Image 1 (cartoon, rainbow, N blue to C red):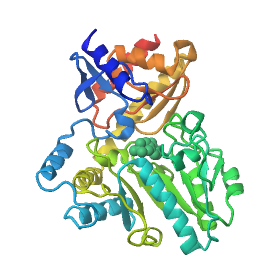
Image 2 (cartoon, helix red, strand yellow):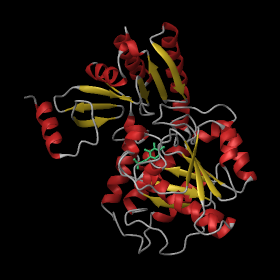
Image 3 (cartoon, rainbow, N blue to C red):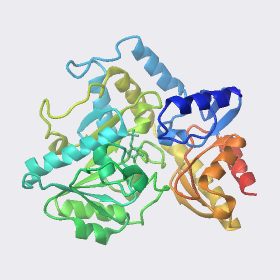
Image 4 (cartoon, protein in one colour):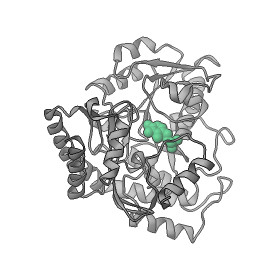
Length: 400
Ligand SMILES: *Cc1c(COP(=O)(O)O)cnc(C)c1O
């Protein structure tokens, strides 16, 4: 057996099979490139589902983490620490909001938003106790906790995990009329991804997000934008909502906020929303820890310059124009996305998304399939144009 085969066999014997990874074993990584245990190099066109927007081992982020490792890494929120205030202040400023509630994973940010919306509904909006409802979209992906999978429409993600948390109404994504129908006096929030990532990088019809904004404002309902995958530069803007000139009441951030170094997530909103919490009513041992804040602060500083958003815009235009040429040849049936983010529907004659991903891996390019014959392309925003072109060459060869 090769080293790769041995490591995979042993992983399969001793870890739960809740993933089906591509058959390579990464040993190190830098920028947009990963190296496996056999010394083979691969171009990372997935970037940890946008957790690695700034690339592997980004020197600024690694430096910030190393400096913090030598000072203090964890205090718990029982005490103040000297990175907390600056992280929260600068992140709130980046979002144009007043307050931040830091957590760790994306799913925790979503859970926190559900609790925030319910508490806001009872305390501020005046919904009768126990009646608060949240409207979500079909095809959503908001994480893996029992409450979050309760409002998933993906049978794989949801089956066998009941009894499910009640209080959610599901409407088709992109359908404003259906959303209008679903909102009642008991609705406290509409929770949406401004672009649905796991569903295959689905961009809603133009005017949808502004329509959601208008409706939620009219009906005194919080608009919660899950920007965990779409946010922080991926689409060419700090937030995907910006493309439609929309400012939600609540931003949910995660993935890239931890710079690919540590898990960092946050709920960001104004005081009239996040101000509902009193001591003891919500929390997290690791949320807002010094290491997380040091890395998160550096991420915010990097986004403040706008250079990563600019790169995503420029490289994204190039990526999409190249992918559209493939639609012309009929090998690709559809391309969706924004910025350096694309869902590519391959003509099923060329194989499933998984088969395409495996063929790309053999050529040194790593992508992830989603449903059926769709692959998702989302390289780190630090990728060079030459490397991106090389990756696209490999895709063309696989489809030749
Ligand atoms: C990844 C993701 C989450 C969940 O984040 P975890 O850190 O995996 O818990 C939630 N929402 C969206 C849109 C995501 O892409």
